Length: 166
Image 1 (cartoon, one colour):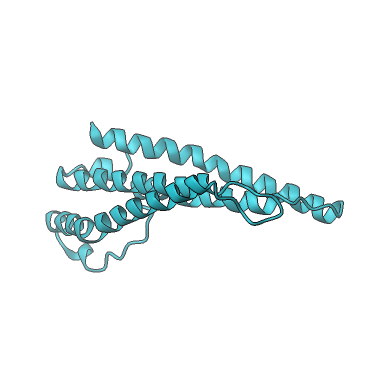
Image 2: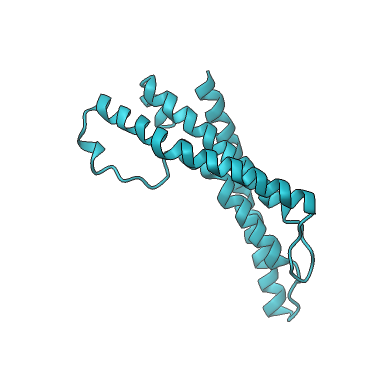
């Protein structure tokens, strides 16, 4: 049940965030048309599209992990039997993934909190708030961390069907 709940959260977030790609593509096309067809570029499009891309990129980490889309080097573990491979992967999560995810979460929380308290904005032609993007870092770290928990539970309980995203 917890595996399904975590997977569902990251699936929903992933499907919502994918829409941002269309939005920032539209903003870029709009700015290019204004810039080259009408010689009247916007002052805000570059900063907004850069922030939307940041949201898009960081918030899809948990979704990518859910669908096994992160880069992996399986040269050694592909030769192991299924049981040994699963426990080596669990050890890899314990040694590498969870410490990284915890540092990412704790540091991004502090980073976002400082930005939010300062009301941080961009230095561009218009002052766009930066703190929502930095808060999204913290959310992304949390989503990645809980998806790691789901992946480990799948390995421990031999839920291969769940690991394949079925």
